[in-house]
Length: 196
Image 1: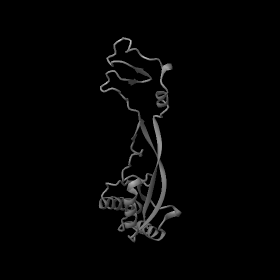
Image 2 (image 1 turned 60 degrees about the vertical axis):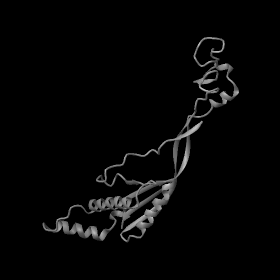
Image 3 (image 1 turned 90 degrees about the vertical axis):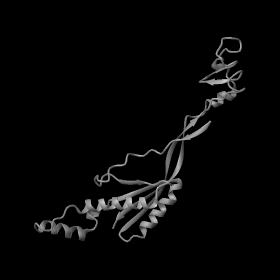
């Protein structure tokens, strides 16, 4: 039996123009270019900033001027956490994500938050059919729960009759106990980047 790895399950990525209710996630892999990831995060941060400030028109009265003063003085309104861009990486990509986190820590207008954890991944266990004696001639071929002996041509002779499930050898009985899937744990890093 061999293990076939499935990709990690991820929810679909929402549009960057959606509200603060949907998280802005950037998945980092080992092949993600550093500068591309920085530009992607900067673009998402600028869209978050635009959404927070909104449209301000200083020419039509005091309403927008008061709103601008309130935004400048309040910082974080009502004690809410600021909207952030989340970088997610697993296994070997953690090193690249940490490099991005260190880069953004060096910037003076952003705040960086790190959290680590583990993620469960589901893998398939593939059981391969084994043929003895070359190309199936005179050997055994496993077909589901039954085993056919003989020439492998499917003829009804003394050597080509099927064995019942009760006469199965011990080695094959142990092979049937192999599970179809298995769960493995993967290290994960989540970096939250928000504007100050």
